Image (tube, rainbow, N blue to C red; front, side, top):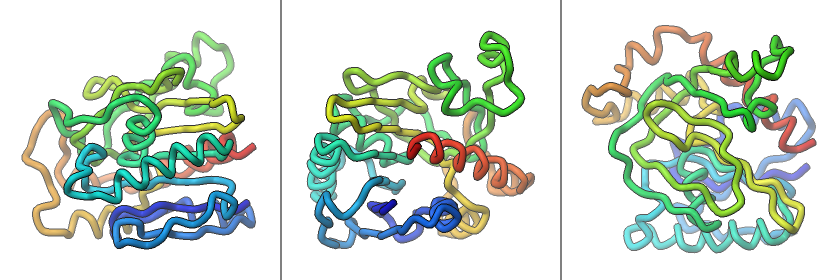
Length: 241
């Protein structure tokens, strides 16, 4: 499988997606669209991944390439490609496909709880789940967050996850062309190294609030990165099956 990642910031790369791809024998190509890199042809990839970034999906005047990317996402969806959006990428997918991305009333920063909907169990459930009703109650986990925006679901999308801070945390859209489109507001792909590098940037930490952790809290339990990676790998396996 050929994977194309659209990168919006040099610090926000594919993370553990690279490890998963290597383990499966897949290839990854990076396109730094934020630096004016040309978009490859739709025939050059099987899975398109729109990564995270610090800008808003609606800031098209400040970042004109966002409009270019949204048009590209629409074309890829129409061509029946598999698409995955992560944080900003999730918002871009929602916005491009008929939803709306906008500034949220709060920020999420650090490890925050995710509540899985009944439709999301197959995507984010855990191995110990047996009974469907019990599974719904158990399908909760911590995921890394770094955002101040949110979005509305595009028409036809299935709501997969929520939490107290933001109703929209993940969605699935299956289009007539046969493609699967998955968006997650949270970062399962982030590694410990990515978090440390991002936290080291001046002014990275938002002001304290209900859903904002300190850098010390974020790095207090490093096993969370391993748990996120396992969940991410399972998610990728299902998306690409």
